[in-house]
Length: 620
Image 1 (cartoon, rainbow, N blue to C red):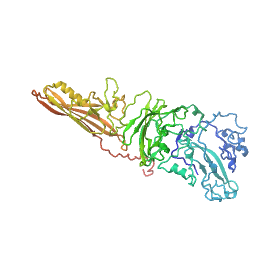
Image 2 (cartoon, helix red, strand yellow):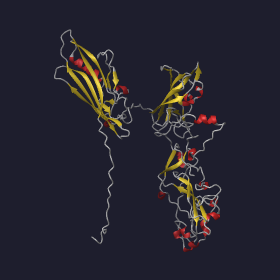
Image 3 (cartoon, rainbow, N blue to C red):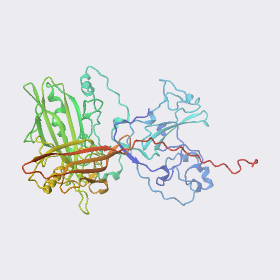
Image 4 (cartoon, rainbow, N blue to C red):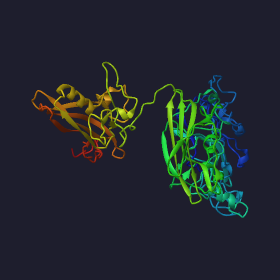
C-alpha cells in the first residue's frame, strides 16, 4: 500500500519545471522487457521490434534500419542508436542534471494492493506473486496497472503491469520506471523518515508497560524525530554552497531539536512540543502536574530544561549560541516577588521542610538577531516558586521576544490593528521630518490623573496613559483667589489638561511606522469659549473615532479621527479676601464609526453564446 506522509513532517518544497520545459535529452528507445521483474531496468519500457519506433532520431535512419533484429532493441537506455546505415549527423545532448530526492522507504516492486487472498491467485491481479503463468493466461486485464508510492513526491519509482495479449498464451509484462511529478509544488526531500509510513504501535506488555505509560500517559505527548536535519545523502551538490539564514516563522533550531515554548494543546495542560518560531513573539500559559515527592524528576519545572540546549546561530550550522540566565525572580507563596542579585547560580528543585523550592513558574526568552537572519544572543529570565504537599498542579507562563541588534525597539500596540487595553501611540512631526515619539509608550498620549486630594495645583505632573477602547474621566478642583492673574492661571490650567508636550499626530494602526506619515492621523483642536477678556480652560474632551478594517473574520481596529475639544469659562474678578472653587475635568471617549457589514455575493456568470451563421439554414 502506498506510504502515507505524516502531518507533522517538515517539508522542503522543490519547484519543478514542467516536462515540456526540461533540458533537452535523447529519449531512450523503448525496449522489450522480460516477464521477470529482476530483468527490468529503471528506465525499461516496451517496444515493438521495429526500429522505426526507436526514438527521436529514428526518422533519419535508412530503410534498412527497419530490418534491425529485435534483440537490438534490448540494449537498454542507449538502444536509441540507429543502425550503421543511419546518417552521420548526430545531435549534441547535454547530460541531464541529477535530481535528488528522498530514498524510497518501500519497494514498489514488492507492493501489491490487489493481493487479497492468502496463498491464492487473485483474479486479474497482475502483481500477485501467487499467480502462475497458466493463471496469467486467463487474465483479461490488470486491475491495478500501476503501483506507486506517495503521489506528492517529485520523483519516485513506479511499477507498471500489463498483459501481452498477442503472445500465445498471454503473458504478464512488468516494468519499473522513474515517474516525475508534473505538479508545480511537490515534495523534494523529507527530513522525518518515520512520517513516510504508519508506524506499528508497541503492544503493552508487563515489561514495557511502565515505559509506555511514562511516554503516552499524559494529556499531550510528542513524537519528535531523532533529528530535524534534512537528509543530505541525496541532496544536490549545489546546496553545499548555499548560505542559510533564519526566516520568519521558521522554528528556532537547537543542538538536539528546536527551542521549546510550552503551551496548551487540547487542554490546559502544558505540552513541551511547541516550537518557538523565529520573529514570532508569543506568550502562553498552561498547567503542569506536580508533586513534592517527585518534583526533582519533572523536567518541565527545572531551570536546566530551558537552558541546557544551545541554539544554532543559523540553521544547519555548527555555530552555537548558549542561553544565558538574564535574571532570577523568586515568588513567595503569598505572591510577593524578589529579584535575586546573582544570576550565575543554577537553582534546581529541591525538597526543604516538606516544600519543593526553585520550581519554575515562568520563563521569558529574549533573542537578539542580526539583519542577516543570524541569532547572536539568547537570554532567559526565570520566575521561581515553591509548592507544598497539597499542590497537585501549578500554572506556568512562557514568553519569547525578538530584537534586532544595534536598533532601538519600537513599542507597538497591535499588529496591525489596535488591541484593546494597549496605549494609543502618538507623537509630533517637525518640519520635513517623520513622526517623533516618546520612548516611553505610556507617556505618548496621556490624560490628567485624579488624586486623593482633588487639588489641581497639587496634581501637576500626574498623568495616566490613554488606553485604546477605554473611556475615562478624571478631574480635580481649582481654588481661585483674588490675587491670581488671568494669563498665568490660564496657561497653568492648559498645561494641566494637556500635559507638558501634547502630541500632534496619532497612529492609525497599532504598528504604524514613524516614517510613514500618511499612516498617522492629525489631532484636530476645537475651542469653545465665551466672549470675555479673561478665559480659562476648565475641560478637555478627547474623542477618538475608530473603525473596523479588513476582513469580517478578523477585523482590525483603525483610528480614523481624533478631536481634542477645550472648553473655557470666564474668570470674573473676585473681591479682596474672597475665594472661588471651580471643577476642572478631562475625558476620552472611543466611538466606533464602522459601517454595518453588508453581505457581498459574486456576480452571476454571463454566458456569451454565438450561434453559427447557418444555424437556421434553410429556414432563414
